[in-house]
Length: 601
Image (cartoon, rainbow, N blue to C red):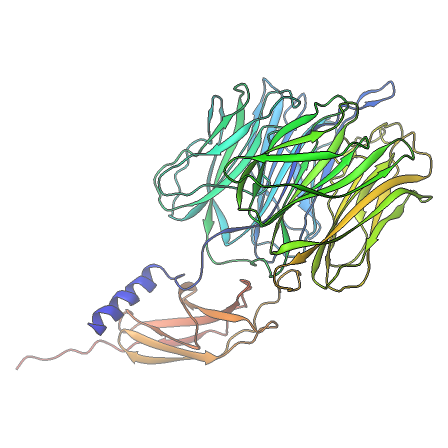
């Protein structure tokens, strides 16, 4: 019986060499910037066009992970943007679809096995493209290794399809993204999306990825088959419009860096409902994976915003703090939150007290928060700074180390670009790059995140922390002074752990690898244990003749089922709990003997 069980396990290891290490892909972080039409006018010069947009990330990226970036834009002609980040990772265009009727493009890129530490992704359009409507969705995954197959589609009706894909291997991660490709009234109740049950896959919306304001969504799931599948999502709450969609099948395997412990932002959703004249109530969706949700509001009036939630995952929203100013016109900054929530989809109504001014809000989906996460708040009312390059919006002293600090600041006639500070200080404003020559006369630099500053700080100590924003004087009516009001809240972590990025240094290379011949069909390997900077060596990968054949959690491995009278070469690498993989060891070789034969008498 033991022999049969051993042979069964051996066959499984040979057939599925990556057994022993998790291959489940996970969303590390997501940023969603909704479709914002930059239709402000340069005096006497027509619409404002852009050629670039930044996508700031709430966390530094993890080594070995993969990032998918979907870009939607509108102009009079088709073109393909480019995507870069501040760690010089390569973003390869996977799909591009141009709708010549509605003059919109959708392009999807992927960066695989990335260098970790990136904080900002940048999308650029060629000079002369003259886009004035853009949206971006950027998602970081771990345990994604390669692009398998992909497709694009145009579809309408209440069931949106992503085209058909046929994966070449089982357990691909399927990713589907889509946008409405016709203009809709963003001031009416928006599109509400629902998942569809399909065989061999459990779909999930990516956190902060569904937008009732601009009619967009992104979902994912691991597909346990190689049969053809046409992903679907249902839409309701608006007239049927045409959608541009893309579906990627991404190969999975143990690769990359899992999120570290402690409180962290999983998703960021920028929502710009529209300019002056928006209705008092905006309908949208908010997808959560964490246990704390925060809404940062910058309003063009001093009226407070309230949020009501409906659906299976309905939650209570509480206004924590509001700051106001009367300098440069009356406006306000406000922070609301929902605690101890069940992950899922909330249908939200965001209500503002007046239709006379525009407002901008940002949702944060946060994991690892304490059961009672609210610590304290701080405000700066009627703030003013004489600098046109940077200003201190506000400060707060958390009650303990390892808290998450969030800030929203309304600014008069300025655009915030980045947040000053080192590791853990992350500005969240998306900044647009205007076409050359329009900067000096521009009245409103960017409708998305214009006159606003958003930022987070992962506070590793209980000392005072300040939100110091860099600003760019783009507005022609800027006075040389920065008027602002700022609201800040400190939130507690669930376990008091430091919410820093997980280690990116791989374990040391396994040493002293020895190959011992056990029989004509078996070679036994042994080596000296590796070490890891965080003390988290999780296991070892064994390679035979350059191909992975198995894993081990100890410092030995028996390779069975070999052919007689054959030379085999082996190397071994180590991996840690964050998915960091060492280089392979120095090769060693061994030769199995000829099979023994018996003579008949």
